[in-house]
Image (cartoon, rainbow, N blue to C red):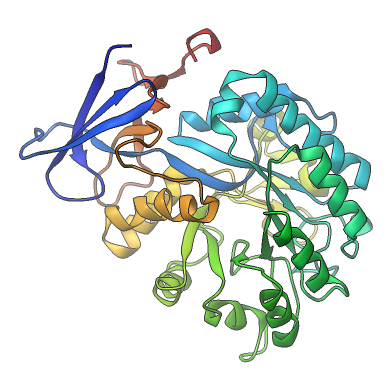
Length: 397
């Protein structure tokens, strides 16, 4: 296989960078003094650890299928996402198992999913039953953690289970955390109303993450203490945050970035499927009745609570770059930081998988504009001259 070199402005540093790829791996990273004023930015592929669905692809489809996951992989690539965790949310036990199995089948049989799916995130069903912290997770399926059910997930996931989100207020949460961690699964705290002692107990049992910190919460909280402060201050918890312009105000996101910079923080999209009914008339049955508001936020019709996001990490990166003034920091939060959570390096180094994104961006842009995406060195997306996004056919993957 012939080596290929891509050149651009270094999204993680100064000057330019040439990335040489061969046999799906990075073989050289060479500095370039002047890549050219019109050159695109170049950086690693984005990694999203919480994706419920995207466009017509849905990890929580009523009829789960491998094709749903392949669709997610295809459309996410156009936004620079080269690896992601399909996220299964609260449902009946049988429904959740079926969705896990569909993801496994996609990884086994479909080339795009095989290269893009980095594992499975299960968000629920052991979440808070209270309005606000529960979000749009169905109350009728909220239940305490069961070692038997967790063992079923592990068996069905064929080694792909990476993260489980739970609320520490449930009896047995610490035992569930210890069980999952002992099987190589990371435990995240989210959608919770737990006390400081309950959160600490689960952290002591091995929990290491917070799921979309600042969301899945009551509209009104005590000044202190509360479950957000506890997680923000806990050095053993790395926090996922949604930077889509809706879930967190700029000042809140800036505070979390500053507070967690030494503890760990990473971007997630929490993207959900937006089928044609939602895109065409703004109404969907996702989460029990969701409307696409005029401001671009997905909100539950009855409660007004946010129901995931229609934005992807290309928006998150631009949001953080605007708030911090640093493209490099923003790219790191969507690449190196989630890779540390996955622990499957090396990353953006000689010998690492050649996941490369070329994109345009200027300060103030709402999103990075993806030009070209390589996954393991293979072209997966190219923005055509007429500005129409196109993905390569699976025969080329």
